[in-house]
Image (tube, rainbow, N blue to C red):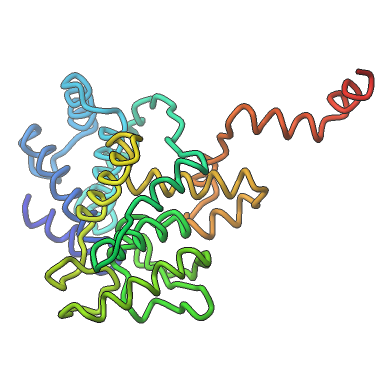
Length: 295
């Protein structure tokens, strides 16, 4: 079994450009599956996969987590099928668990600015934290994209950055003037730190800032502003997309900026607050305009 799993992981890394985080998730999902099923991969049947999914749901696992594990199994057994190691992909016919629809959490403009303006003071850490928060909100980056950013990716004169997204796909993203100012101030402080990496964002020892450390920065300042500790980097990404949409940006432009491979991924951001919807309705619908004239 391990030989098949390792071969699959090598394929996903070398051919599909899967990140280390994704590879760890694949390894964990497959380990849990085979620990329960206890069969050789080539002997796995449709009933085994259905049983695993049912077992995970009975254990109280989130439906989104179980769906992700099913996607891992589809990829794994699909790989074995294409390699001629199985006669079919038994995971292909297993439906995804029905998901509870949840709107993504996003901040108001005032709340977003309260967080990114919270790191006051001078010095390396405060300048770095301001730049981290400003860039997350200004460019709508994933936390992994921010952590992976190198000095060569910055073009502050033009207000542009190069981002390496999922599958190592690159895109160019504009950065707002406020975030550019914060980045320039941080880079002055960064130059004073003993650097062992070309990473833009460093810890106090001069090494690349990790995904986990970036999350801690966001949680820290969201708590300090009274917004609670459940706000993370992805909340700022949601907020970036929502504010663009509310300002009239085209959905396909937002798709490009976020680095989504399909428009369906971006459509989750089409939620708008009721007051904004009412403003749009009142300003655009003929019956709403007629009602105002008759008052």
